[in-house]
Image (cartoon, rainbow, N blue to C red; front, side, top):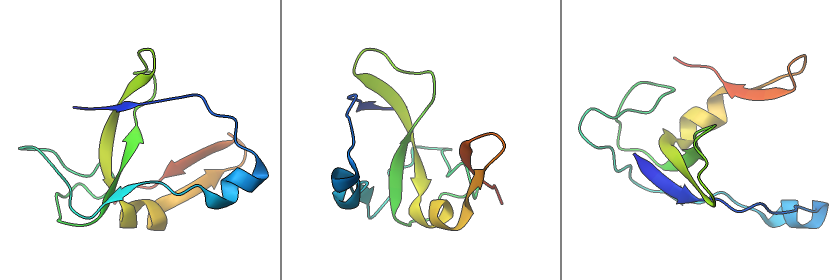
Length: 88
């Protein structure tokens, strides 16, 4: 399990243009861990995605997800006002 720090930040349109999510060239998958979207532990670039409802103060748990899986799988569900990803 990975813990990341979370802070509530007001994002303006100007800031949004410069925000970039941090990525890691190689995953640090522990024994048995896999990307939740492709279900593999391939040695590809990953980013940390916070896990909903795990916030404790300014920290939350996170999971490693392949950047490629996110970029190819994200979808906006208009009727739910929700961004999600398809799984393979």
